[in-house]
Image (tube, rainbow, N blue to C red):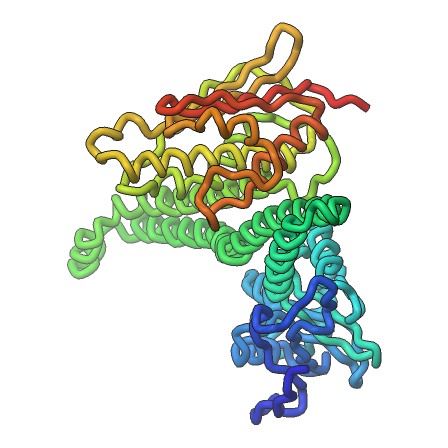
Length: 471
């Protein structure tokens, strides 16, 4: 157990009890570890206190994920750091709620709070968290102890612990693999468990990306978008007032005429509305980018549905944009898209996007390898990935993703889709990306996935799926 620390000496002395948080990686976790073994926060505040006290607590503790609300020392709810600052950043919220009781502010928070017992397995807790709606999936987890008390665990601390258990699973997997002749059945079970861990970890990483963007970009953009409407209205009112002055007083004093000339009033009156309008367009563009990222991860869609395949590919390319533009030796990777006229395809969108991510990421790795070993002046036109889509006469959807990397040796091509087989250096690849992709395409969608490659001529992956899934 972590040591209890004394409450801070401030005007908030009697409001909180706290446990110090340490990195989850410092814990001695096991595969069967529970939430009870993770570091946690216990910060309580009475709802009769003013809302400004919440801001003070969050400022005092930069890592504090949330605050537990009590009424006469009885639990009634929780406010997270993200939700608090998201709401307080809205117009007039700070003035309305900073001096009023916290209970007034809390009435506006209509949100489910994931509550788990402290004996819940870390793996089960992570899966339960990721299955929540995306707007609350990354909130702190409320833990109820055996004694009936409440505490909070930061979602990112839970992910750190999950990653450590993932690493422990890999170690045990290797040990079992060495003894596979004796425990072949046990190895298969552990292999399936590890594959599921990898897939969950990838979706968790995507979820982190979306949550980080929502936290770091959405809040200020919403603040700007909400206020720019008023800024446009106020500026127009001021310009109308200036025009009225010009009509009523056409002969201003010399000092005013000089000021008008210095600020170029006619140009300013024309350009200011355009400037504010362009800012409004820019904020909407950022919102579209965030929406594109959410379309890629599809965290809120677990069932099959009709989707635009091209939208999924484009969203995946957006995720990989930084890698495409920052290849070794300063060479960008050119994307060539030759999209056919495809119908909407019935599929598991999130899983299919994961296939695109695995194949495109492997293509980028292959090209980066060729860029490192080739002289920069000779690779300027060689770094490219081609994506072609078409529908065949028998109504099968074809997606071809090819690169002009170094190619794959023929001796390795027959094992590409085997679990844990990789052509990458030790520590760089898990050998599960293509294996998972094969299962998604073949088993989940009733399609085909094949690879065509030759040394020095690059690699092409061909995905073939029906436009409708079998019932």
